[in-house]
Image (cartoon, rainbow, N blue to C red; front, side, top):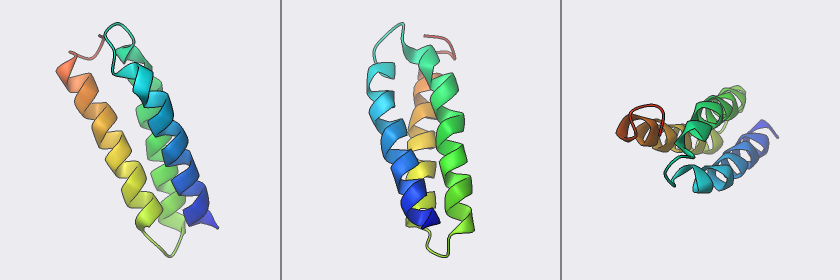
Length: 73
């Protein structure tokens, strides 16, 4: 059950990250990266690791976008 919740949080975060790729909307990642890490925390409770790994991948993508944009843009 926790694995499904983690995957759901990861999918919602990934969908919300699509507009954050565009310039001037990158600051949205400051909200979305912790949201993905929360999904990974939920996945940590589960016995399966697919949801956790997916959320960590989404968080890494958002963190990379923040790094490339200088943290603001």
